[in-house]
Length: 178
Figure 1: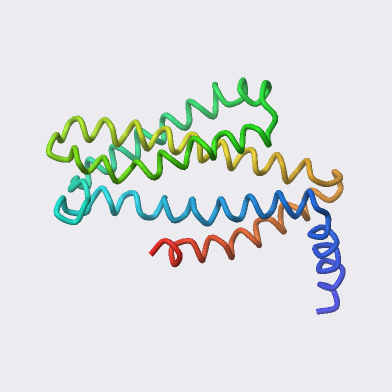
Figure 2: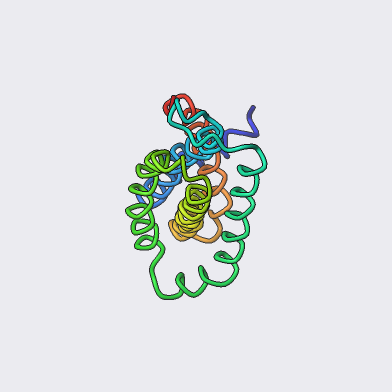
């Protein structure tokens, strides 16, 4: 226990720094809502049309998830680095969040098109791909903000603190989401 005291003091000193506190809080809140959306999306695709879902089969859901994964890989590999060179992380984080919110709110309205299977499949894949791109942009920017919020010799502790706090928030996400 005595060996942990210096680590606890260092974490408390870090969280008292406003830049670290804000970056950790942003990351944690975003993690909470992100985990909720990640958990609910495949369930919504699987749910019956009568209950407001899309009534897709497991193969279609897997295909949508695969498409979004490929789109994200291409985005993170080729497009994000170019955007990150032109836009500050805090601006990119906030702009992505502003764009992401209405896309998450719009998602259930795709069920109105569920009688057009092909159209709803394509729109679900496109909407989810854009959501994932914005979500991962926010995560990447969060880590940039956390790493830039403290001195270089404190980065490991700041990242550990952020992961610990975010884990608590992530555990609450599914409960809050219902």
